[in-house]
Length: 70
Image (cartoon, rainbow, N blue to C red):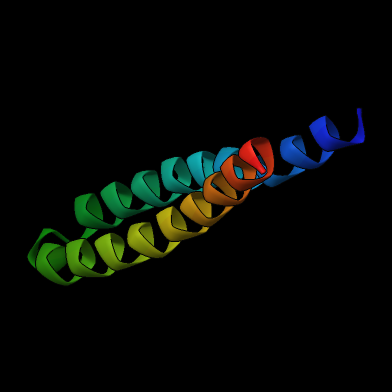
């Protein structure tokens, strides 16, 4: 039973990453709406941030998979 709890805890970064990506995208769109001339820099920074958030989700997912099949 405790193995299931640990796997669930490993998947928490995936849920947190989904929420963080939604918030970051909303803020990026808001920033572009306020300053359309800076959209290139905003997009570049947003994509870098989304990639870092996604890597945290992938680490949690891979850890959960390792625990499931180990």
